[in-house]
Length: 246
Image (cartoon, rainbow, N blue to C red; front, side):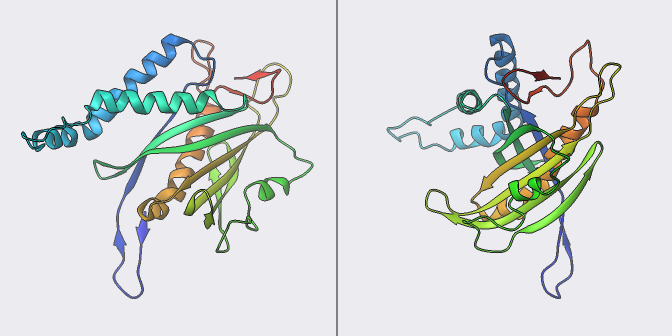
């Protein structure tokens, strides 16, 4: 990511991203347990040293003990994400992630909601309305629109500054990605639309969240196009209550 202010020399800094799916509602206990352990291990690697340093600096005469360990934090984050995912409609999935400046985890956890819909090629304008390309009621500035080309479909990303009673001042990112049907030996595969939504309030997050969502779009496109391994696709999703698409 590259930024420039006025006539000052261009300042360049690299932001990298980690994104992963939260297990869907109804997933088995073994999958949830493995995912929780993986999340705890990631957080330990990313922030474990900082937590250990903070514990070491905790005043010995403080009547309160240091409030948590990395394992405590990882378990709490995992539990919160699973609870959020369990409350989603069947055609929605929760994605969590982290943004890095160099080797340092700078923003986490970040959340993106993915909604899967059967594409409506007869109505090409509907996706632009869904992402608020012309603005939503809460927007306080005209949105910025970026078109995105992925490895397996094209999309659009909309970023706008907004204000609402519940969230205060925040930045919204709404994106849409049309995935072209995966080639199969059976009936023609349908195209799938993916709607992505996230909100951030911190100024530092506002500056980078657009590129973060674009990274999510590329991740989804890559997983959608990947050949199944042992009969299981990298990306599993549901379009409606009757049909499971993999």
